[in-house]
Length: 250
Image (cartoon, rainbow, N blue to C red; front, side, top):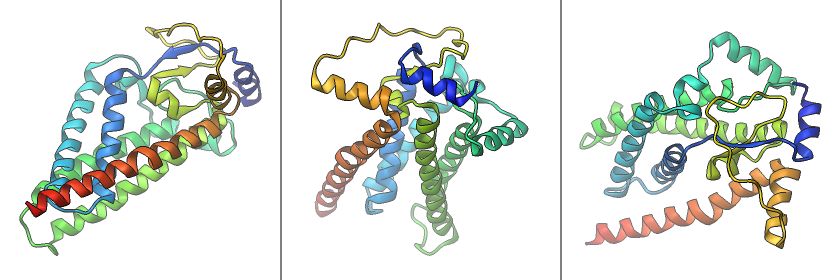
């Protein structure tokens, strides 16, 4: 589907909305994001670092099981691509002509699988590093792998913004609500759940959200991402760090 046609249709709000991301996926996504941010940005002290690591492990195991037992976009098979398909998508993406995927596209699927694998490996390394010398090989590998994961997270965030600009969709909002806007030229996936009809925007806040969601989804994604980091993630990490300091004193 030509990007010009897609953007024209979506700018006019003619595309249908369906519920793509279920509640389990959304809760696990944001819990994992908060836990890793705490692990990477907060002081690496007991018990905060240890508990956050175990939380990551629990979330990963739930997400992996859900990826094999659920249906729709949450299922791993919904974003399974061959290396040839991934390279073809990357080539088209560099030209600004990447095709639309209602679930993860080939590049985001690659990042998701890489994040799941590296996070799982690093939690195992973290458990093995517990009680060993600070400068041992396990601790060093654990630290370097955490930097690699942080790089993958940065790529993921850049990909979200890039896709929001290309496909004119607020992807950050989609992961909060579970609802995505499917271009009319794309076949609605089987089993899709159509949410209630969109209410007419009346208040100033509703008009602003409509403007950020439909007229300027890239800006909306960037604004939401900034607000989540500045107003939720960083204050949460600061509060947990203070709590951890209190626990260490006692």
